[in-house]
Image (cartoon, rainbow, N blue to C red):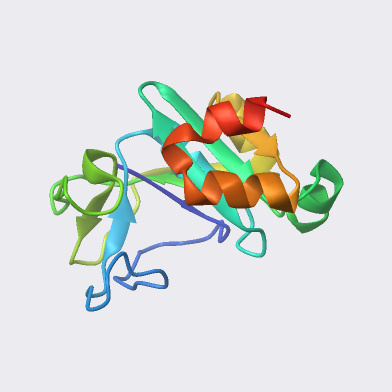
Length: 152
């Protein structure tokens, strides 16, 4: 499993849930089997995003310019986690791309990135910098996000 954090010095991930997928969701440690999906979570939280995985292509749509992104981008680390306490529910969130653990998890290793942009590029994640009106269209219909963004 992989988990991304802007904190480069995590020794143990505690269950928490800043962005519940549904109203009464408990505290969890989130992970993914895909390093490229984890990389998308290094995008600064001050920037509105839509993240998507279309078959084998990972895409992040951001509501800002490249210059605005660079101002906020502080990088972070992608941690490798043991998978033994993780499980998934395909009907919630990102389905089998997103795994959760109810228990604390200690990282096995980490890869540090000076910037999120570098992490995205190294992991072959496509990033679209979108104007507000286009971003809102993608946000309303993420399954067609690539087609909407390519209309620019």
